[in-house]
Image (cartoon, rainbow, N blue to C red; front, side, top):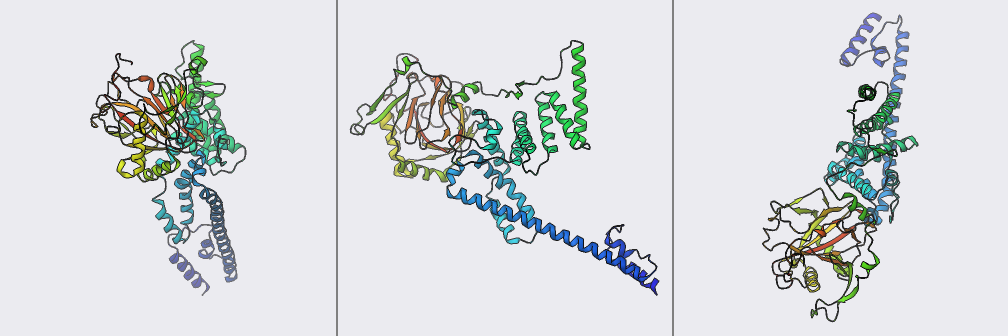
Length: 550
Protein backbone atom coordinates (compact mmCIF):
# COMPACT_ATOMS: atom_id res chain seq x y z
CA UNK A 1 0.00 0.00 0.00
CA UNK A 2 2.84 2.38 0.90
CA UNK A 3 4.54 1.57 -2.40
CA UNK A 4 1.32 2.33 -4.30
CA UNK A 5 0.97 5.69 -2.52
CA UNK A 6 4.56 6.57 -3.39
CA UNK A 7 4.03 5.68 -7.05
CA UNK A 8 0.83 7.73 -7.20
CA UNK A 9 2.57 10.68 -5.57
CA UNK A 10 5.45 10.45 -8.04
CA UNK A 11 3.05 10.32 -11.01
CA UNK A 12 1.11 13.26 -9.58
CA UNK A 13 4.29 15.31 -9.20
CA UNK A 14 5.50 14.55 -12.71
CA UNK A 15 2.06 15.32 -14.14
CA UNK A 16 1.90 18.74 -12.45
CA UNK A 17 5.43 19.86 -13.38
CA UNK A 18 6.26 18.25 -16.72
CA UNK A 19 8.71 20.90 -17.88
CA UNK A 20 10.42 21.68 -14.59
CA UNK A 21 13.79 19.96 -14.04
CA UNK A 22 13.88 18.02 -10.82
CA UNK A 23 17.33 18.31 -9.30
CA UNK A 24 18.77 18.06 -5.86
CA UNK A 25 18.14 21.24 -3.91
CA UNK A 26 14.83 21.85 -5.69
CA UNK A 27 11.60 21.56 -3.65
CA UNK A 28 10.38 19.09 -6.25
CA UNK A 29 13.33 16.82 -5.53
CA UNK A 30 11.91 16.14 -2.13
CA UNK A 31 8.38 15.72 -3.42
CA UNK A 32 9.14 13.46 -6.34
CA UNK A 33 11.93 11.23 -5.06
CA UNK A 34 10.32 9.04 -2.41
CA UNK A 35 13.10 6.68 -1.40
CA UNK A 36 12.69 6.89 2.37
CA UNK A 37 11.84 3.67 4.15
CA UNK A 38 8.91 5.06 6.07
CA UNK A 39 6.13 7.60 5.57
CA UNK A 40 7.51 9.71 8.45
CA UNK A 41 10.73 10.11 6.55
CA UNK A 42 8.80 11.16 3.49
CA UNK A 43 6.90 13.75 5.56
CA UNK A 44 10.15 15.04 6.95
CA UNK A 45 11.27 15.71 3.41
CA UNK A 46 8.06 17.64 2.86
CA UNK A 47 8.83 19.79 5.90
CA UNK A 48 12.14 20.78 4.36
CA UNK A 49 10.43 21.36 1.06
CA UNK A 50 7.93 23.69 2.71
CA UNK A 51 10.72 25.54 4.47
CA UNK A 52 12.42 26.04 1.13
CA UNK A 53 9.18 27.38 -0.34
CA UNK A 54 8.80 29.83 2.56
CA UNK A 55 12.35 31.03 1.99
CA UNK A 56 11.55 31.54 -1.69
CA UNK A 57 8.42 33.46 -0.70
CA UNK A 58 10.41 35.69 1.67
CA UNK A 59 12.92 36.41 -1.08
CA UNK A 60 10.02 37.36 -3.36
CA UNK A 61 8.60 39.69 -0.72
CA UNK A 62 12.04 41.19 -0.12
CA UNK A 63 12.45 41.79 -3.83
CA UNK A 64 9.03 43.49 -4.01
CA UNK A 65 9.80 45.64 -0.98
CA UNK A 66 13.17 46.58 -2.44
CA UNK A 67 11.47 47.56 -5.68
CA UNK A 68 8.87 49.67 -3.85
CA UNK A 69 11.60 51.27 -1.78
CA UNK A 70 13.46 52.24 -4.96
CA UNK A 71 10.28 53.67 -6.47
CA UNK A 72 9.52 55.62 -3.28
CA UNK A 73 13.06 56.99 -3.12
CA UNK A 74 12.88 58.03 -6.79
CA UNK A 75 9.50 59.70 -6.25
CA UNK A 76 10.80 61.69 -3.25
CA UNK A 77 13.90 62.78 -5.16
CA UNK A 78 11.85 63.82 -8.21
CA UNK A 79 9.32 65.63 -6.02
CA UNK A 80 12.03 67.76 -4.43
CA UNK A 81 13.69 68.36 -7.80
CA UNK A 82 10.51 69.34 -9.68
CA UNK A 83 9.39 71.67 -6.89
CA UNK A 84 12.65 73.59 -7.31
CA UNK A 85 12.67 73.52 -11.12
CA UNK A 86 8.96 74.36 -11.53
CA UNK A 87 9.28 77.40 -9.27
CA UNK A 88 11.59 79.08 -11.80
CA UNK A 89 11.78 77.04 -15.04
CA UNK A 90 13.81 79.54 -17.07
CA UNK A 91 16.26 80.24 -14.27
CA UNK A 92 16.67 76.54 -13.58
CA UNK A 93 17.25 75.67 -17.25
CA UNK A 94 19.70 78.56 -17.61
CA UNK A 95 22.26 76.19 -16.10
CA UNK A 96 23.38 73.94 -18.99
CA UNK A 97 23.97 70.95 -16.70
CA UNK A 98 20.34 71.19 -15.49
CA UNK A 99 19.17 71.26 -19.11
CA UNK A 100 21.32 68.23 -20.01
CA UNK A 101 20.18 66.26 -16.95
CA UNK A 102 16.50 67.05 -17.70
CA UNK A 103 16.89 65.63 -21.21
CA UNK A 104 18.82 62.62 -19.88
CA UNK A 105 16.26 61.91 -17.15
CA UNK A 106 13.31 62.00 -19.49
CA UNK A 107 14.99 59.91 -22.17
CA UNK A 108 16.89 57.38 -20.05
CA UNK A 109 16.14 57.43 -16.31
CA UNK A 110 12.35 57.50 -16.58
CA UNK A 111 12.53 54.60 -19.03
CA UNK A 112 14.46 52.58 -16.46
CA UNK A 113 11.83 53.41 -13.85
CA UNK A 114 9.14 52.33 -16.29
CA UNK A 115 10.78 48.94 -16.68
CA UNK A 116 10.95 48.60 -12.89
CA UNK A 117 7.32 49.55 -12.33
CA UNK A 118 6.13 47.28 -15.16
CA UNK A 119 7.00 44.32 -12.95
CA UNK A 120 3.99 45.26 -10.81
CA UNK A 121 0.32 45.81 -11.61
CA UNK A 122 0.51 49.59 -11.51
CA UNK A 123 -1.45 49.96 -14.72
CA UNK A 124 -2.60 53.51 -13.99
CA UNK A 125 0.91 54.91 -13.76
CA UNK A 126 2.15 52.94 -16.73
CA UNK A 127 -0.76 54.12 -18.86
CA UNK A 128 -0.03 57.72 -17.93
CA UNK A 129 3.69 57.31 -18.51
CA UNK A 130 3.05 55.67 -21.88
CA UNK A 131 0.88 58.59 -22.95
CA UNK A 132 3.43 61.14 -21.72
CA UNK A 133 6.39 59.41 -23.35
CA UNK A 134 5.34 60.61 -26.78
CA UNK A 135 6.35 64.08 -25.60
CA UNK A 136 9.65 63.00 -24.06
CA UNK A 137 13.06 63.74 -25.60
CA UNK A 138 14.46 61.06 -27.87
CA UNK A 139 17.83 59.35 -28.01
CA UNK A 140 18.84 61.93 -30.60
CA UNK A 141 17.91 64.72 -28.19
CA UNK A 142 20.00 63.23 -25.40
CA UNK A 143 22.93 62.92 -27.79
CA UNK A 144 22.48 66.55 -28.83
CA UNK A 145 22.39 67.70 -25.20
CA UNK A 146 25.58 65.80 -24.41
CA UNK A 147 27.33 67.26 -27.46
CA UNK A 148 26.22 70.73 -26.38
CA UNK A 149 27.96 70.29 -23.03
CA UNK A 150 31.10 69.15 -24.87
CA UNK A 151 30.87 72.22 -27.11
CA UNK A 152 30.79 74.46 -24.03
CA UNK A 153 33.64 72.48 -22.53
CA UNK A 154 35.82 73.09 -25.60
CA UNK A 155 34.89 76.70 -26.31
CA UNK A 156 35.29 77.96 -22.75
CA UNK A 157 38.12 75.59 -21.80
CA UNK A 158 36.25 73.92 -18.97
CA UNK A 159 37.66 70.62 -17.74
CA UNK A 160 35.31 67.70 -17.02
CA UNK A 161 35.77 68.24 -13.26
CA UNK A 162 34.42 71.80 -13.55
CA UNK A 163 31.53 70.66 -15.73
CA UNK A 164 30.74 67.72 -13.45
CA UNK A 165 30.66 69.87 -10.31
CA UNK A 166 28.62 72.55 -12.09
CA UNK A 167 31.09 75.32 -11.22
CA UNK A 168 29.96 77.69 -13.96
CA UNK A 169 29.95 81.52 -13.82
CA UNK A 170 26.65 83.30 -13.33
CA UNK A 171 24.69 80.20 -12.40
CA UNK A 172 21.67 80.58 -10.16
CA UNK A 173 21.41 76.89 -9.35
CA UNK A 174 24.15 74.43 -8.45
CA UNK A 175 24.00 71.13 -10.31
CA UNK A 176 26.42 68.27 -10.69
CA UNK A 177 26.88 65.17 -12.81
CA UNK A 178 26.88 61.73 -11.21
CA UNK A 179 29.16 58.86 -12.16
CA UNK A 180 26.43 57.50 -14.42
CA UNK A 181 25.90 60.94 -15.99
CA UNK A 182 29.60 61.24 -16.79
CA UNK A 183 29.59 57.73 -18.19
CA UNK A 184 26.67 58.70 -20.42
CA UNK A 185 28.65 61.67 -21.72
CA UNK A 186 31.63 59.46 -22.51
CA UNK A 187 29.48 56.82 -24.16
CA UNK A 188 27.80 59.44 -26.36
CA UNK A 189 31.20 60.66 -27.52
CA UNK A 190 32.32 57.08 -28.15
CA UNK A 191 29.26 56.33 -30.27
CA UNK A 192 30.03 59.45 -32.32
CA UNK A 193 33.60 58.26 -32.91
CA UNK A 194 34.86 61.17 -30.78
CA UNK A 195 37.63 59.46 -28.80
CA UNK A 196 39.04 62.74 -27.49
CA UNK A 197 35.91 63.50 -25.46
CA UNK A 198 35.43 59.81 -24.69
CA UNK A 199 38.75 59.82 -22.84
CA UNK A 200 38.01 63.08 -21.02
CA UNK A 201 34.65 61.91 -19.72
CA UNK A 202 35.60 58.30 -19.00
CA UNK A 203 38.57 59.60 -16.98
CA UNK A 204 36.19 61.79 -14.98
CA UNK A 205 33.82 58.85 -14.56
CA UNK A 206 36.65 56.69 -13.25
CA UNK A 207 37.82 59.45 -10.89
CA UNK A 208 34.38 59.88 -9.33
CA UNK A 209 33.93 56.09 -9.15
CA UNK A 210 37.30 55.73 -7.38
CA UNK A 211 36.20 58.39 -4.90
CA UNK A 212 33.35 56.11 -3.84
CA UNK A 213 30.35 57.80 -5.44
CA UNK A 214 27.28 55.61 -5.92
CA UNK A 215 26.97 54.21 -9.43
CA UNK A 216 25.17 51.50 -11.36
CA UNK A 217 28.01 51.09 -13.85
CA UNK A 218 31.15 49.20 -12.89
CA UNK A 219 34.83 50.03 -13.20
CA UNK A 220 35.12 47.21 -15.70
CA UNK A 221 32.66 48.98 -18.02
CA UNK A 222 34.48 52.30 -17.62
CA UNK A 223 37.91 50.80 -18.26
CA UNK A 224 36.59 48.92 -21.29
CA UNK A 225 35.68 52.20 -23.03
CA UNK A 226 38.63 54.18 -21.68
CA UNK A 227 41.35 51.70 -22.66
CA UNK A 228 40.13 51.45 -26.25
CA UNK A 229 39.65 55.22 -26.58
CA UNK A 230 43.21 56.02 -25.45
CA UNK A 231 44.45 53.42 -27.93
CA UNK A 232 42.55 55.23 -30.68
CA UNK A 233 44.33 58.45 -29.64
CA UNK A 234 47.67 56.70 -30.08
CA UNK A 235 48.57 56.24 -26.40
CA UNK A 236 49.50 52.56 -26.64
CA UNK A 237 51.38 52.32 -23.35
CA UNK A 238 48.43 53.69 -21.36
CA UNK A 239 46.03 51.46 -23.27
CA UNK A 240 48.05 48.45 -22.06
CA UNK A 241 48.08 49.79 -18.50
CA UNK A 242 44.31 50.34 -18.42
CA UNK A 243 43.56 46.99 -20.05
CA UNK A 244 45.67 45.18 -17.47
CA UNK A 245 43.78 46.97 -14.73
CA UNK A 246 40.52 45.85 -16.33
CA UNK A 247 41.67 42.22 -16.46
CA UNK A 248 42.73 42.38 -12.80
CA UNK A 249 39.08 43.16 -12.01
CA UNK A 250 37.59 40.67 -14.48
CA UNK A 251 40.04 37.99 -15.62
CA UNK A 252 37.36 36.37 -17.79
CA UNK A 253 36.76 39.51 -19.88
CA UNK A 254 37.22 38.06 -23.35
CA UNK A 255 37.52 41.31 -25.33
CA UNK A 256 40.01 42.79 -22.86
CA UNK A 257 42.21 39.70 -23.10
CA UNK A 258 42.17 39.86 -26.88
CA UNK A 259 42.91 43.60 -26.86
CA UNK A 260 45.80 43.18 -24.44
CA UNK A 261 47.46 40.57 -26.64
CA UNK A 262 47.05 42.86 -29.65
CA UNK A 263 48.39 45.91 -27.79
CA UNK A 264 51.40 44.01 -26.46
CA UNK A 265 52.13 42.73 -29.97
CA UNK A 266 52.14 46.32 -31.25
CA UNK A 267 54.44 47.38 -28.43
CA UNK A 268 56.87 44.61 -29.33
CA UNK A 269 56.85 45.73 -32.96
CA UNK A 270 57.57 49.27 -31.81
CA UNK A 271 60.47 48.06 -29.63
CA UNK A 272 61.99 46.04 -32.48
CA UNK A 273 61.58 48.96 -34.87
CA UNK A 274 63.46 51.24 -32.49
CA UNK A 275 66.27 48.70 -32.13
CA UNK A 276 66.60 48.54 -35.90
CA UNK A 277 66.35 52.32 -36.17
CA UNK A 278 63.25 52.02 -38.29
CA UNK A 279 60.35 54.42 -38.30
CA UNK A 280 57.52 53.15 -36.12
CA UNK A 281 54.24 52.45 -37.87
CA UNK A 282 52.35 53.10 -34.66
CA UNK A 283 50.60 56.44 -34.45
CA UNK A 284 52.25 58.62 -31.84
CA UNK A 285 50.26 59.75 -28.86
CA UNK A 286 49.28 63.41 -28.95
CA UNK A 287 49.83 64.08 -25.25
CA UNK A 288 51.18 67.19 -23.58
CA UNK A 289 51.55 67.24 -19.82
CA UNK A 290 49.28 64.25 -19.43
CA UNK A 291 46.49 65.94 -21.42
CA UNK A 292 45.46 64.77 -24.87
CA UNK A 293 45.50 67.34 -27.62
CA UNK A 294 42.16 68.25 -29.11
CA UNK A 295 42.04 67.10 -32.75
CA UNK A 296 41.85 69.74 -35.47
CA UNK A 297 38.50 70.12 -37.21
CA UNK A 298 36.95 71.68 -40.31
CA UNK A 299 36.95 75.29 -39.04
CA UNK A 300 40.24 77.07 -39.85
CA UNK A 301 39.65 79.94 -37.41
CA UNK A 302 38.50 77.69 -34.57
CA UNK A 303 41.13 78.90 -32.07
CA UNK A 304 40.53 82.58 -32.83
CA UNK A 305 36.77 82.18 -32.74
CA UNK A 306 36.77 80.41 -29.37
CA UNK A 307 39.30 82.83 -27.88
CA UNK A 308 36.97 85.70 -28.79
CA UNK A 309 34.07 83.85 -27.17
CA UNK A 310 36.12 83.67 -23.96
CA UNK A 311 36.78 87.40 -24.05
CA UNK A 312 40.38 86.98 -25.17
CA UNK A 313 39.96 89.09 -28.29
CA UNK A 314 42.13 91.71 -29.90
CA UNK A 315 42.41 94.78 -27.71
CA UNK A 316 42.23 98.09 -29.57
CA UNK A 317 45.14 100.43 -29.24
CA UNK A 318 44.40 103.74 -27.49
CA UNK A 319 44.83 105.49 -30.85
CA UNK A 320 42.08 103.38 -32.42
CA UNK A 321 39.84 103.68 -29.38
CA UNK A 322 39.90 107.44 -29.84
CA UNK A 323 38.05 106.92 -33.12
CA UNK A 324 35.07 105.43 -31.30
CA UNK A 325 32.34 107.84 -30.19
CA UNK A 326 28.88 107.96 -28.68
CA UNK A 327 26.24 110.22 -30.16
CA UNK A 328 22.54 110.74 -30.69
CA UNK A 329 21.37 109.37 -34.01
CA UNK A 330 18.40 110.92 -35.84
CA UNK A 331 18.66 108.95 -39.08
CA UNK A 332 19.92 111.88 -41.14
CA UNK A 333 17.17 114.10 -39.74
CA UNK A 334 14.45 111.50 -40.20
CA UNK A 335 11.20 113.19 -39.04
CA UNK A 336 10.41 110.17 -36.84
CA UNK A 337 13.69 110.53 -34.95
CA UNK A 338 14.13 114.30 -34.66
CA UNK A 339 12.31 114.54 -31.32
CA UNK A 340 13.45 111.13 -29.98
CA UNK A 341 16.82 110.20 -31.48
CA UNK A 342 18.51 106.93 -30.57
CA UNK A 343 21.73 106.62 -28.59
CA UNK A 344 24.41 105.35 -30.95
CA UNK A 345 27.78 103.91 -29.87
CA UNK A 346 30.67 102.83 -32.10
CA UNK A 347 31.64 99.23 -31.36
CA UNK A 348 34.32 99.01 -34.08
CA UNK A 349 35.87 101.47 -36.49
CA UNK A 350 36.66 99.39 -39.60
CA UNK A 351 34.46 97.78 -40.65
CA UNK A 352 32.11 100.09 -38.83
CA UNK A 353 29.83 98.37 -36.33
CA UNK A 354 27.47 100.46 -34.21
CA UNK A 355 25.20 99.67 -31.27
CA UNK A 356 21.87 101.41 -30.67
CA UNK A 357 20.31 101.62 -27.22
CA UNK A 358 16.66 101.27 -26.17
CA UNK A 359 15.63 100.00 -29.58
CA UNK A 360 12.97 97.65 -28.19
CA UNK A 361 10.98 97.95 -24.98
CA UNK A 362 10.48 95.03 -22.57
CA UNK A 363 6.82 94.86 -23.60
CA UNK A 364 7.73 94.67 -27.30
CA UNK A 365 10.33 92.00 -26.61
CA UNK A 366 7.86 89.84 -24.69
CA UNK A 367 5.27 90.22 -27.45
CA UNK A 368 7.78 89.24 -30.14
CA UNK A 369 8.82 86.19 -28.10
CA UNK A 370 5.17 85.27 -27.54
CA UNK A 371 4.50 85.41 -31.29
CA UNK A 372 7.66 83.47 -32.13
CA UNK A 373 7.46 80.60 -29.62
CA UNK A 374 4.69 78.59 -31.36
CA UNK A 375 6.60 78.82 -34.64
CA UNK A 376 10.08 77.99 -33.35
CA UNK A 377 11.82 75.27 -35.33
CA UNK A 378 15.41 74.16 -35.85
CA UNK A 379 17.19 77.15 -37.40
CA UNK A 380 18.15 76.79 -41.05
CA UNK A 381 20.74 78.22 -43.42
CA UNK A 382 20.37 78.91 -47.12
CA UNK A 383 22.09 76.31 -49.30
CA UNK A 384 24.55 78.32 -51.44
CA UNK A 385 23.97 76.10 -54.49
CA UNK A 386 20.18 75.75 -54.45
CA UNK A 387 19.06 78.70 -52.34
CA UNK A 388 16.86 76.30 -50.34
CA UNK A 389 16.76 76.59 -46.54
CA UNK A 390 18.24 73.57 -44.76
CA UNK A 391 19.53 72.67 -41.27
CA UNK A 392 23.26 72.61 -40.56
CA UNK A 393 25.33 71.26 -37.66
CA UNK A 394 27.21 74.54 -37.34
CA UNK A 395 24.01 76.40 -36.52
CA UNK A 396 22.38 75.18 -33.32
CA UNK A 397 19.35 77.28 -32.38
CA UNK A 398 15.63 77.54 -32.99
CA UNK A 399 14.12 80.29 -35.08
CA UNK A 400 10.89 81.55 -36.58
CA UNK A 401 9.90 84.21 -39.08
CA UNK A 402 7.34 86.93 -38.31
CA UNK A 403 5.37 88.94 -40.83
CA UNK A 404 4.05 92.47 -40.30
CA UNK A 405 0.43 91.32 -40.31
CA UNK A 406 1.15 88.92 -37.41
CA UNK A 407 0.90 91.81 -34.97
CA UNK A 408 1.26 95.62 -34.96
CA UNK A 409 4.39 95.23 -32.81
CA UNK A 410 6.18 93.47 -35.68
CA UNK A 411 5.32 96.29 -38.09
CA UNK A 412 6.40 98.90 -35.54
CA UNK A 413 9.77 97.24 -34.96
CA UNK A 414 10.34 96.85 -38.72
CA UNK A 415 9.64 100.51 -39.38
CA UNK A 416 11.88 101.54 -36.49
CA UNK A 417 14.79 99.63 -38.05
CA UNK A 418 14.05 101.37 -41.34
CA UNK A 419 14.14 104.80 -39.69
CA UNK A 420 17.42 104.06 -37.91
CA UNK A 421 19.27 102.63 -40.91
CA UNK A 422 17.78 104.75 -43.66
CA UNK A 423 17.24 101.54 -45.67
CA UNK A 424 13.92 100.22 -46.90
CA UNK A 425 12.26 97.19 -45.33
CA UNK A 426 10.10 96.60 -48.42
CA UNK A 427 12.76 94.34 -49.95
CA UNK A 428 14.17 93.10 -46.63
CA UNK A 429 13.61 89.58 -45.35
CA UNK A 430 11.00 88.87 -42.71
CA UNK A 431 11.88 89.50 -39.08
CA UNK A 432 13.73 86.42 -37.91
CA UNK A 433 13.53 85.54 -34.20
CA UNK A 434 16.08 83.08 -32.83
CA UNK A 435 16.48 81.39 -29.48
CA UNK A 436 19.83 79.96 -28.40
CA UNK A 437 19.51 77.60 -25.46
CA UNK A 438 22.10 75.30 -23.88
CA UNK A 439 25.20 75.37 -26.07
CA UNK A 440 23.31 77.22 -28.81
CA UNK A 441 25.64 78.73 -31.40
CA UNK A 442 26.13 79.79 -35.01
CA UNK A 443 29.72 79.17 -36.10
CA UNK A 444 31.62 81.68 -38.29
CA UNK A 445 29.68 82.50 -41.43
CA UNK A 446 28.91 85.27 -43.90
CA UNK A 447 25.48 86.87 -44.09
CA UNK A 448 25.97 87.77 -47.77
CA UNK A 449 26.38 85.38 -50.69
CA UNK A 450 29.81 85.05 -52.27
CA UNK A 451 30.70 84.92 -55.96
CA UNK A 452 30.85 81.12 -55.90
CA UNK A 453 27.22 80.96 -54.71
CA UNK A 454 25.36 83.40 -56.97
CA UNK A 455 22.00 81.65 -56.59
CA UNK A 456 21.78 81.88 -52.78
CA UNK A 457 19.11 84.63 -52.87
CA UNK A 458 17.91 84.17 -56.44
CA UNK A 459 14.48 83.03 -55.30
CA UNK A 460 13.96 86.27 -53.37
CA UNK A 461 14.78 88.40 -56.41
CA UNK A 462 16.07 91.24 -54.21
CA UNK A 463 19.82 90.93 -54.68
CA UNK A 464 22.39 90.30 -51.98
CA UNK A 465 22.17 91.06 -48.26
CA UNK A 466 23.54 94.58 -48.00
CA UNK A 467 23.28 94.98 -44.20
CA UNK A 468 22.42 93.21 -40.94
CA UNK A 469 20.41 94.67 -38.05
CA UNK A 470 20.60 92.47 -34.95
CA UNK A 471 18.35 93.05 -31.91
CA UNK A 472 19.37 91.58 -28.55
CA UNK A 473 16.18 90.61 -26.73
CA UNK A 474 17.77 89.20 -23.57
CA UNK A 475 20.79 89.45 -21.36
CA UNK A 476 23.00 86.38 -21.17
CA UNK A 477 24.67 85.39 -17.91
CA UNK A 478 27.72 83.87 -19.61
CA UNK A 479 28.73 83.35 -23.24
CA UNK A 480 26.63 84.18 -26.27
CA UNK A 481 28.77 86.98 -27.72
CA UNK A 482 28.69 88.01 -31.38
CA UNK A 483 32.28 87.79 -32.59
CA UNK A 484 34.19 88.73 -35.76
CA UNK A 485 37.29 86.48 -36.01
CA UNK A 486 38.84 88.39 -38.93
CA UNK A 487 39.55 91.54 -36.94
CA UNK A 488 38.91 90.41 -33.36
CA UNK A 489 35.74 92.19 -32.28
CA UNK A 490 33.48 90.68 -29.61
CA UNK A 491 30.06 92.24 -28.98
CA UNK A 492 28.19 91.09 -25.90
CA UNK A 493 24.38 90.81 -25.69
CA UNK A 494 22.56 93.55 -23.85
CA UNK A 495 18.79 93.43 -23.69
CA UNK A 496 17.04 96.18 -25.65
CA UNK A 497 20.09 97.12 -27.70
CA UNK A 498 20.85 96.39 -31.36
CA UNK A 499 23.96 96.27 -33.53
CA UNK A 500 24.20 97.17 -37.20
CA UNK A 501 26.81 96.66 -39.90
CA UNK A 502 27.07 96.61 -43.70
CA UNK A 503 27.92 93.27 -45.34
CA UNK A 504 28.67 94.84 -48.72
CA UNK A 505 30.82 97.72 -49.82
CA UNK A 506 29.04 100.48 -51.75
CA UNK A 507 30.30 98.84 -54.93
CA UNK A 508 28.29 95.74 -54.15
CA UNK A 509 31.39 93.68 -53.39
CA UNK A 510 31.25 91.59 -50.24
CA UNK A 511 33.15 92.73 -47.18
CA UNK A 512 34.82 89.48 -46.14
CA UNK A 513 35.86 91.00 -42.84
CA UNK A 514 32.25 90.71 -41.66
CA UNK A 515 32.46 86.94 -41.25
CA UNK A 516 30.99 86.51 -37.77
CA UNK A 517 29.65 83.99 -35.29
CA UNK A 518 27.24 83.61 -32.38
CA UNK A 519 29.22 82.06 -29.50
CA UNK A 520 27.70 79.16 -27.56
CA UNK A 521 25.52 80.19 -24.63
CA UNK A 522 27.31 78.98 -21.50
CA UNK A 523 24.76 80.05 -18.90
CA UNK A 524 21.39 81.56 -19.64
CA UNK A 525 19.09 81.84 -22.60
CA UNK A 526 19.72 84.10 -25.58
CA UNK A 527 16.94 85.68 -27.66
CA UNK A 528 17.68 87.77 -30.75
CA UNK A 529 15.79 89.07 -33.74
CA UNK A 530 17.32 90.30 -36.95
CA UNK A 531 16.49 91.99 -40.20
CA UNK A 532 18.51 91.42 -43.37
CA UNK A 533 18.30 94.35 -45.78
CA UNK A 534 18.80 93.59 -49.49
CA UNK A 535 20.24 95.57 -52.40
CA UNK A 536 17.06 96.13 -54.37
CA UNK A 537 15.22 99.28 -53.34
CA UNK A 538 18.32 100.73 -51.67
CA UNK A 539 20.19 101.84 -54.82
CA UNK A 540 19.49 105.54 -54.10
CA UNK A 541 19.36 105.22 -50.32
CA UNK A 542 22.94 103.91 -50.31
CA UNK A 543 24.48 104.90 -53.67
CA UNK A 544 27.52 103.18 -55.18
CA UNK A 545 31.00 104.42 -54.35
CA UNK A 546 33.75 105.37 -56.75
CA UNK A 547 35.99 102.42 -55.86
CA UNK A 548 35.50 98.74 -55.14
CA UNK A 549 36.03 99.14 -51.38
CA UNK A 550 34.18 102.40 -50.71
